[in-house]
Length: 143
Image (cartoon, rainbow, N blue to C red; front, side, top):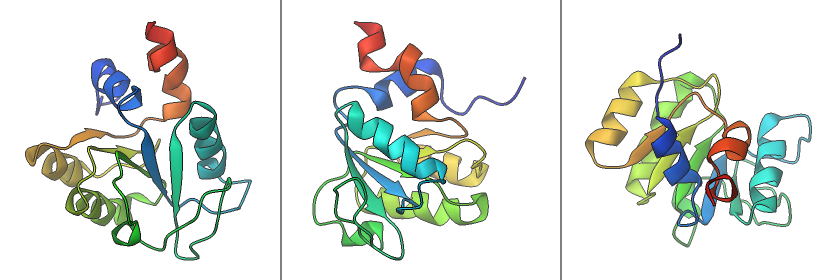
């Protein structure tokens, strides 16, 4: 069985009602990319999504930003759709902006970043997908 980076209780907490604003790093208007569909799904569940991409595109009606540091309001969760080799720097940026949680998508793994992020008290989930976990662990499933 694969390593579990984020137990079901942690995943349910991150998906919960208290995490309203999700910065989605790697989100663009490319509808063939997983980030586009996952962001749309999160938005449909009542989350505010914030696109973070070098092109700073408006996606799903939300203004985009080039970096996490440019977002002028609080972010609850940073959802990371970048290759594993770049993900650790994004986790560090998420900690710097005061995010409550960092979520590395399926296939995005950086154990050192996971350890660093958790060591400073920031919740982290790695190698999972909120769209996949939502039916069993999202707020509506626990009602």
